[in-house]
Image (tube, rainbow, N blue to C red):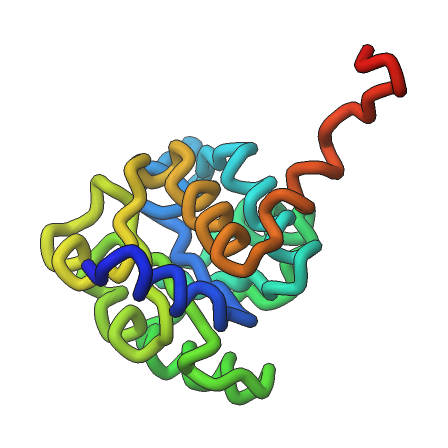
Length: 184
């Protein structure tokens, strides 16, 4: 892990933040119906964190190795346009995505939980991992969330990025009730 000030400096430059799905936006468990449909459990607070990034000018995106209709549906409901599923080589997908968006690798971040994510974590300007990630990810992440995957880790990272960019207070203020002149 980088010292916190280095992490903030890296997060401050981000224009694009990419997330893995299984183990990051979910707890990594895979559920299947008897008909073979895949079901995932997403955390609403994590989803709101991605929406806050989007509303504050940091593009959220997905790069994941699995392909599931529920991921397409969830990301569409959050307004996330860039969703790369069924990816065999995440580094190639990362390079293609930043080229498509015209973003420098140093302006992109990635949050991953397992060894398949390490190449992208090394190639981007800011990397993060949930606390319950693989040990190698823990050692190499710039920022280690205090929360597990699918249980608020992504939200924590989103808020860290927004705080580093001086945008967190504004993002949260939109949801606070306005106070009248008498303080009620």
